[in-house]
Image (cartoon, rainbow, N blue to C red; front, side, top):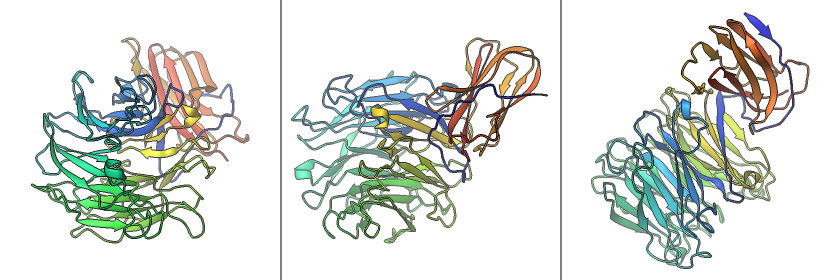
Length: 539
């Protein structure tokens, strides 16, 4: 065993999570178009190409590559060996589309065994005055992108059809129904259109709001099987509903069935003016292990006493009848922080069999925060204290504006998920998170056996991390530390090392004050490149 000291240390700060749960930033994905709003929407799609790994998508609804406000969607392959690969499929919108404003995966529309992706393009009437919006269907195939896109058009100008999209098997036939919101319909009263799953999706029914200005359909989501049984249910948000009081907002739960319900089976209303309850809704999965799926509702306009727009999010447990009161409520504390602007079920991130969920607090330009995402593990009973919190990199990044669902992007039994930060550096960035960083081996030539980089320990670390390289034979290696932006901040070794185990620590000056951040150890050794992520909490 050979111990080595670090050769170089350059301090650079980056976003970092709290230490309560071992979740790691696995990769970042950056937009390339100024003001393209890359990361405005993110989704884990599921396995589109049949290789056993879930694909994922990132939307950039303001990307101007296809014309003003055309938008683009980038589809990435799942699998550890593809982490960091360029997109496998890039879908470009038409001028004024706002393609990628909303994304939804996690379903199979035509029951062919491959996951499909819904893409919302609600339209920009400043660019195309008659834009009604549309929803695109990107079907799973091998190779990815080899099947033509299908399109569902909006009904009328200004409907903003495709503002929200969701997939859920409402009738239990193994095919996911398409649920799409049109909050601009009929003087912004709003509507939600539901299409039957199949090779040629057909209109099933349309839900309408109660009054003008409700913006019913601003948010839609599959709720999962909230009663148990074979049928999935769904949620609709109407944040500007004023039945209770002005702009208090309202969320609706509809039961699935052999004939899905078209009247709400439960409603929840905001208690105060301007609460905007229903801005976000999501299925949380089975958080408490009772066999019934649970639900999340965001209330970003809620006040905390005299502090304005701190926001709130609420978890409702699946039951029959559905509960009127939440199992718990999380109240924000930052002025204009807008906690609950995004809510999401993120799958099972720690592999314990219970569903986990996340709540976003992206802030506004008046909040002077960089945004954060709070992650909650499933447990019995659920509780309102986060198990870890991820914090954005810069003020006004809008980190946490969107949180994806979870899925098996990498190997193992734990789900990964994404967070969007669409205003980062005015280009946008998306972050992929999971429980402990996997090794990503990108083979550059065939004979690369006998080189292995161990996982950093501890992770997260307070002052320094230890790493090890195992060599079955002498090899020329280069071992560097890079920051969140991919810039080298340290070099641990460069040159030929003999066979054996070689240990390193970084940084080597343990008495130094070190910047907190997310870093990666990158090993290059005779045809192999391995990356291991870790978090340095600083002191």
